[in-house]
Length: 178
View 1 (tube, helix red, strand yellow):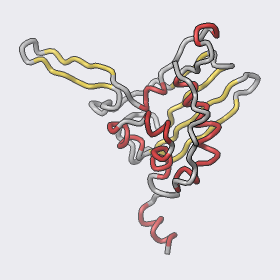
View 2 (cartoon, rainbow, N blue to C red):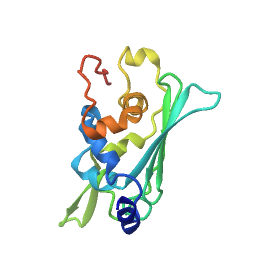
View 3 (cartoon, rainbow, N blue to C red):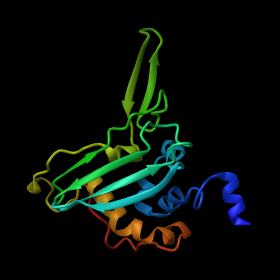
């Protein structure tokens, strides 16, 4: 019966698995904004790879190319180098007028000018960060690096538990962000 249903919908796996699991994680749920949800509903997999010959890792967010109407590339990648040294993210090529995740638009009628302002979004995680001097952060972890560590160490290995709502942290080991 289930195979017949999956053939009809052409969708493999559990629908909306990753967005539901992310919304159960207290830190990831805080990063995801309401305007991010539609794009994240198209997320079909998150993969983590260790970098060869480097102390770092890479996260690949894979989106369903048939359902994703928000950006042109089906895979968004964030690479974390060294011990919190720097990060490089995929430059997101948004489809026309669907970049509501990162921009708000205001139109000034008198001047006939369209202004765009950046706003908080989960997709800001894919912004690159320059090399960070260790004395600068003094024990605090840059926010995007901390989120990458959470996804790699706590979220991906226990994604089924997060999806079911079973895995909750006690808040004692909450990371300090800068």
